[in-house]
Image (cartoon, rainbow, N blue to C red; front, side):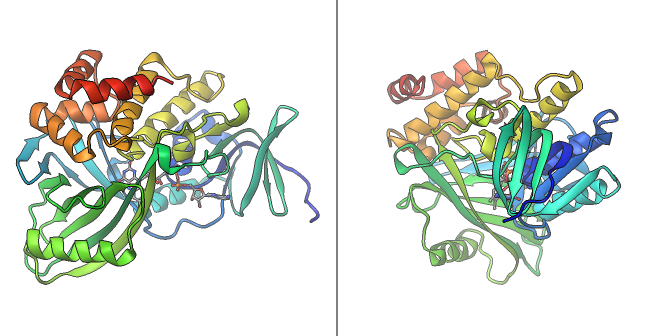
Length: 387
Ligand SMILES: Cc1cc2nc3c(=O)[nH]c(=O)nc-3n(C[C@H](O)[C@H](O)[C@H](O)COP(=O)(O)OP(=O)(O)OC[C@H]3O[C@@H](n4cnc5c(N)ncnc54)[C@H](O)[C@@H]3O)c2cc1C
């Protein structure tokens, strides 16, 4: 097919999902970088409420104005014990996908130097020290391409990975039913026959909550199973008979020991961001907060005239190692996720657990967390994860 003349930009953002738009927003908020010519390419327009992001942070955060709800009290439940805890430092927050997309897209519309294209990206490569993005009919070039498409993703196989799969429903009740001050982070009181299985219950007001049936396992379940489990949980545990489902979402997040590359093929003009860059925490699936921290670092490097990709610090490498170790313990079935999280929530301060899971803990706290867990399985997995 005949290719049109190459179009040149300062930056190309390949993929306008969570990480692509987070980076765009930060570029446009910056008084020095906001006049760069930026092209954003995605195969589809972001017009659906396709996901809900939950994350925790200690400060107000760049997206506070679009936070649907936040919780300062969380619950962790198993059949043996319930841990309800108040957060001092952190808030657990929820953002609806559609609010995030609309917020950033309407802000970006004000900038003439920003172009959106809806095309399928076929290839991203470097030629003569310039980054090139190829779609069906067009070739675009830029100083840097920030990629969140799955073009460079490693193959994920069952030996070194689990899948985090879930179906979430937002339900509305006629009568006030929920306490919107308390969010259930994990309710493990469910049948565990298909792998680690838990519910999130995140009430946004007294009549509305997001209920999410979540599993860590090798295989995705039959569609009917998620529905049946959600229905029985709402009926038997939440004791709700009448409700309306106002939103549904389904997701599969890879939890993998396979390494995702930050610069594919060591090409420094192509920077993988988001899940493609390895910013999905392998042992938990959380991504949003890690994407935000990485975008901040990219902006800081661009401002300093450095290569945008943040160098991995010693602490980054340690957190990666902890993460891989926890996942290795789960994949090798030495302990289940339910057992690991139960021990942590029984023995440790929740604030410390959130700091650890968010890569924000201090080294001494890491040692306390390690000491709380059984030595043998974690030692074996830890040695294996050094590779
Ligand atoms: C339903 C759901 C709920 C989630 N909930 C949470 C949560 O609560 N907290 C959390 O931290 N994480 C959550 N995650 C995980 C993670 O935060 C999201 O997957 C997040 O969207 C990842 O951001 P990303 O930018 O890497 O990918 P995406 O947001 O998926 O963006 C990638 C973009 O690239 C585009 N694209 C892909 N291939 C091509 C191509 N060849 N050409 C052009 N465009 C292309 C896609 O259309 C997409 O828009 C959730 C994931 C899902 C699916």
